[in-house]
Each structure stands twice: as structure tokens, then as C-alpha cells.
Image (cartoon, rainbow, N blue to C red; front, side, top):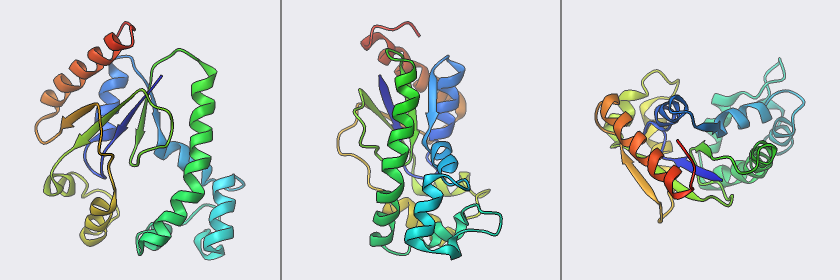
Length: 190
């Protein structure tokens, strides 16, 4: 069983998933799955080289992620191309992880809606200004951050929404309530 935890960049998906882990949940981070696919010799790395070119591969064989990110977000067509290359590979990897332990509940942290069969979707949201402030540590300038934040399309139908504009303590309460509700619905003990 998969519960998708989604939201725009900087909304607090990682914090929500860390709270879920602390509650005993199984969490898969889609960014880490993709990062693994980008390693030298991996299929994602090969696809980037093939479709975007060798200039997106650093001398050590790793993907030049800042350069790729800048290129991908320069147009809707390029972002679509990148997602079309990488998402199917990531879906396969996530499916492999889930298939290893059938019947377990997994929370998949993702910035985009993964076209997997999911049992529920949790949307984490926060206003742009708060997201921008929380993400000053990233190597993304404000203009690029805004472009990424505004470009991400969220699903129209979600099962749970977490408004993450307050303290971590308040967020913990919201996450715990939702986690318990999901476990109850799926007849699992939290």
C-alpha cells in the first residue's frame, strides 16, 4: 500500500516524512531514488547523456544537477522531456522496493504526482514566501525557485491536506493524526 506525500518545492514534505519515520512508518524518498539513477553507469545517467548531451555530465561521471535543473526549467517542453525520461525509471525502482514487502504501508515522498497506483495522497502545502524563506540553504536563486514552485502541477483530488505554515510541533500533531487515520483505514496498527 502506497500513500503519496506530495507538494511543491519547499513546502515541508521531507519534514512530514521524517515525522512519519519517527512514528514508525516506511518512507521512500523519490529524490533519493532519482539521485541513485543519476549515478555513473546507471540508466538515468545514460538517458541524460543521450538526450541532453555530454555537457550535462561532470568529469567524475555524475550528472551536473544544477545545470540540468536550469535547462529543464527553462521551458515546459524540456521539463516534460526530463520527466518522461526519469519518471518511468523511478517508478520501476519504487515498485521493486514495495514488491519486496507486500502488504506493508509505504509513504512515498515526491515533488510530482507519480503515476503509480496509490491508496491515498497527502498534499503538503505552504505559501510561497514561507517556502522561499525555508529554502534559502538550497543553491537556487529566488527567480529560479519561484519558477520551479509555480511550475509544479498538483493533483486536483487529494485525500489529506497538511497546511504547513506554523511550527514543527503543530505539524507533528497534524501528521500524527493523519498517520493514525490512514493506518485505521488500512486496518494497520500505527
